[in-house]
Image (cartoon, rainbow, N blue to C red; front, side, top):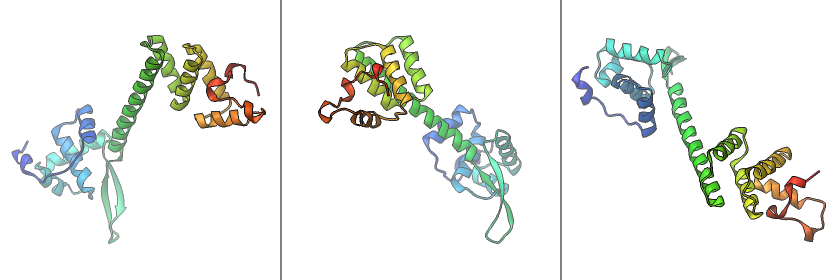
Length: 210
């Protein structure tokens, strides 16, 4: 590689960009080409690219094609301000991979929090089976807020039983509840005298019938 690569124009990138490049095991040249287009968002110009990152035009073209084959870059044809057809480099595929990483990290953080909440409320570590049950609830699409609400109701009623929580979640799902506010609203609208309206943690959902 040309040593002038370390004397080229300075470009800015971020931790997520670098992390994804490392996960994909990109070469330094590939990383530099991605960083170049991430910064300039310019029409494809191999001569300018090679000069900016310190590679020969042939090498820059080779690296560019390797990124195209990996579908990390895409060439789009458009018209410039003068109406000429030009080729523009699009990094959306690479950005989407970064976004997927961020979403997965957020999901993992959420799962860690909810598992810790169960252990805190139960006063003990959860078992591997209980871990899988919580994971199944999340994968089934139960809102985290409802899982926490069902857990708190179980603890309030002195029931440290996952089957009990599962049945509550099942009943809430049948009624289409998406959050605790909808649960409370349902209770408030029951055909009962106002003074006898039941609170969330003082209601037997397992015997509830429309």
